[in-house]
Image (cartoon, rainbow, N blue to C red; front, side):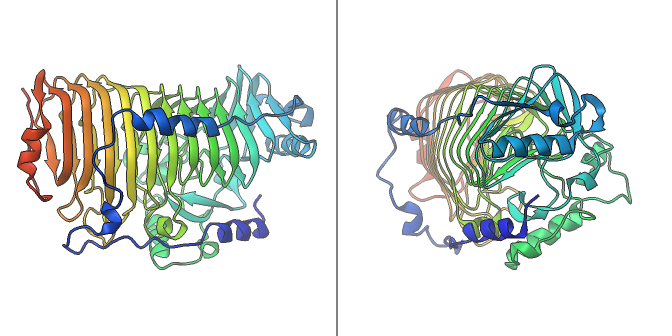
Length: 503
């Protein structure tokens, strides 16, 4: 449980600073946007120089060799007995002893929320399943959380930590949120997830929360929970340092699955996520620094990986970007986007590296995707991708979209610059690229090298891009040079017709 003192401490720690982005006024972008442009980045320089520095800083937490078996604290693995208190006791004893592993043996253990503490590794052994209660009342009292990029007091995430160091979830076991069309998912308000006409849903509360952040309502007055139907996340370490999530399988989440917020030094590896509920994003680092996501499998109902940094006024209030993120050897199947930036991205993102990933499903809409608009704003820069294999996607292999949701209905400038893709091979898609900036906020420096797009059904959509550069790029087997495209763009950012090679 989060005390009022803890809540106040962490609100104050994160509330300094506002980002006043340039407004969309019909004038060219200010020096704020253009600063630092000296031409295209080299194809391999950031990979050779910057990424190794990031990886050198990321270190897995180390725990004392002490085990605390939850069955010794009253847990019964029959899938029916409430083990919430046993988890609480075992974690408390482990923390006070200086740390170690809280071990979940083979069996099925039913519980409410699990709150990790410093120096505790929750180890879920092979053959063990932690099943989380379907009763919302079990996730009270409220805790300090972030919901779709907005801070509030809400139901506890299923596994939660606030302000702790050296925490982990490891093992080959299963974390089962037990969300389905009878529990949690109907709150989304869509019939396909079990909602029925006249039943409660999240829409009113979501609108209220959005209005609160625009009116700068203090976080301690954004009290939701019971009667508001905002679904909790599955795993949310908040303002934590040295986080490891390794080996486990996660399924049936109420909404976002792995959601580190304002964390530093995060490793997520060999995790399997298989869940197709509403807003079931796989992994959403938000306003985090030094993050490694590697060797993971995503089959989701929403974005597989989505980098975030806060929504609208709340993202600008906290003004903490996501930065220094490395994604390696991940596989993505179903989802809205494979490797995504946004849409809650008002705090910005910089220095994203993704390599050696495979994305393939007729139910995956986009492979590489950026979602932003004039309500979010935010500076998104230095996004690097290499050795990306795309089997098939429904829409486009590369999508950068400023028209997402509110589109131009806002006064904050979305900025994307230095989006660099090397060695991407796509086997089937509707478009190779769907890249749409604004006339007064173009996309800067989109660079593709050694990329091929096969079985592309329709032309590219390219609007308002300044600095579109191709080198050895083929669409349906035909070489497409950047000169032909940039000539159409003209000397200033203007909307261009759809262009491409297809059929």
